[in-house]
Image (tube, rainbow, N blue to C red; front, side, top):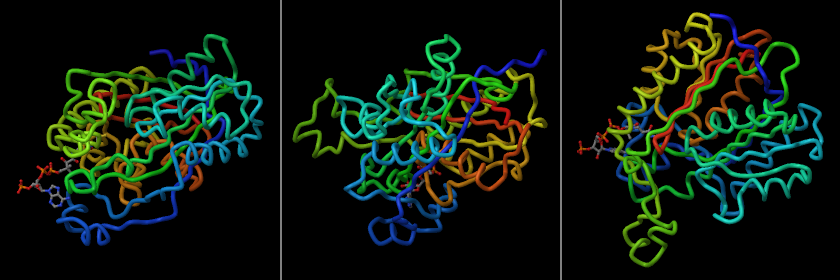
Length: 330
Ligand SMILES: CC(C)(COP(=O)(O)OP(=O)(O)OC[C@H]1O[C@@H](n2cnc3c(N)ncnc32)[C@H](O)[C@@H]1OP(=O)(O)O)[C@@H](O)C(=O)NCCC(=O)NCCS
């Protein structure tokens, strides 16, 4: 198969994580759980938690400023701000508009997208579409998640899994044959109820009953989600590789969505990528929904784990269900 020609590349990345670290031992004091259970079932050791003074827009703007500084980009040059978040600061207007105001990116169109943990890769594909269509040259793709704000702290089966953080990527037209080689986005809305917040929108508005039932918080059928995640991430890995005309052997670094170590291992095995080429930070941050991939990408770049010419495979899965993948050549 002929190699695709990239339309866009990632000019720079940035991340922001709250300072406060909450370990499994800390959670043992609040919940009927144990460090051993959490580590064995998920691989998570600790997570970051943002304080009440920090919102999704604050975190996203901080990650974005770092990416902009690294790329030498001024706020006025940005054409699109696309924010993937499952935890907007409020429902109207968008978190993206708040970030636009914080950055002073007055020439941009800013909006949020909702694709849960797959949001970063969905937003990347949207940014590519805008630039391919010639509607602009520079997009800021941000994933910002304050998951601890929507977690039910009385439910041990979900509370131990999530953390807060933000990652950003500046996407521009590819100039050197490097960049996004392939991307793939999919969803299956028939399975929404396996991972959701049942109430708090317009269908079942917030009231005393909702609060009492805690239906405005995350509910998850963990075992079912696990099975679908493994299957969908395998499909996504395969699609991104085929569309890029590559195999697992060609991948220099694999960055999977960081929800659970066992899901990561199963996906790497399916894609025939050795664990030495898999970037892992779920142990330090837990599941930060759509922010896991851009935060991991930013760390991997900083650590020199990605060099010029390297092929990076990214694969995500989340509520919806949604799943997505991409191969980017550096
Ligand atoms: C959530 C998850 C870690 C649970 O692991 P699991 O092996 O499926 O465990 P189960 O949910 O079947 O629960 C097994 C037992 O552990 C218990 N348990 C659940 N959470 C616990 C916790 N934090 N501490 C201790 N015990 C716990 C359950 O009550 C259950 O007990 P029982 O057998 O007495 O009923 C796992 O299902 C998972 O990772 N799912 C996918 C989650 C995910 O990736 N979501 C995000 C997608 S973006």
